[in-house]
Length: 501
Image 1: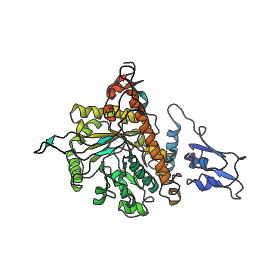
Image 2: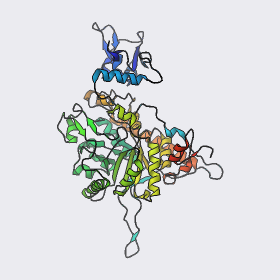
Image 3: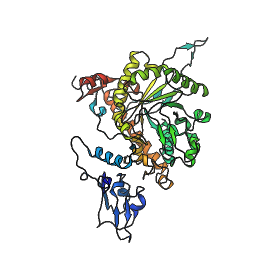
Image 4: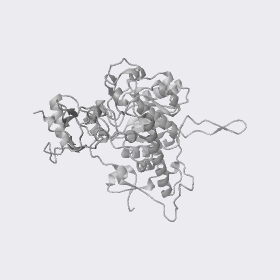
């Protein structure tokens, strides 16, 4: 017997008393888990194909299906987990590199959950956000400029270009091709309504979405897919992608099967061909090279667009960020170990990089020590799960955060980690027409707006509880944080004291 047949991750449990054999589950599952028997008098299931996307459970009209984790198939031990064994079964069967979607499933420390937020009491009274103004508006870009006046003594505006965010939350880079058109449309509309920004990722910008350019960050990655003058001029900012947290050190790959129709037109590559992004930019091997690209992009857009440089959180991230700040970039985006992706080699996703909390803390400290913190803004990403994570990220030194997985969940994603298969049953990470139409862009747009409005309200509540009335006063204010269950080394890196101190 084929090993994977009895080593499935999940098991479909069907209630015979409730099942009416309507076949809804067969039609809804793109992975082919459910089948009718030859005489169509019964339904069977292939558990090895189930990814627990929850689509059949949610759409079954009689609630006859549930999915349970299969804990009986393999013998695990303290040294060998079920995942270890399944990966070996799979590679023994295929000889290939394992791919995974979303972020790592490994149990790395979540430092957000080991940081506690301070609250004002007696001597420093709290603020009621329902009665008093609370400022969440955030500006991203260089803030250190020399003051100049004209002959009449009036100030001359020498501020470089900025991004203005009504809330310190943006939607992270997710390319058209990795996610569907309705998902991109929902992100674009939500960003416009919220007064924030979404990021195209490296797949270019669909011509129908140019109308949202004022709230779009256009990305330039190593493959240069979809990059042309109008694309650069349309975005509110330009992001140079050097790396991403889910797969530091390697490039990207959109399978030819996904590169169809408008996706190939938008990326400006032949339909059906694999879209492979090289691991490095072949014109960047030093900070000086990066500086040339930064200024090339500034010149082609008449110095009207802030330039973002996105990097993965790696061991020497502080010194890399220092170099980027000196390259002329306006914003540094740092993507942590636990960040999501459409597809990444499983072992790279699970083992390369460092958590965003540690990377953010050391970058902010390094830039302050060198006196160049005001030369750039810092954006953090990689497992921002709720408004408390936003507060903690800003207190550790971020100016704003990117959210990716949280945005997908808001649109209906159930985190089945099958993004790389292209079979997303919820119409988000797929290009199959019959699947993409399952995602209603207007409904997804509303859910994104609801999420960010809820988080923003909670951010105001927590800031008020701390006696702080603006994001600016919270930024880098690590006195507002205390650690629990952390080692001395971790506390030192994070720059916070232990709870009780």
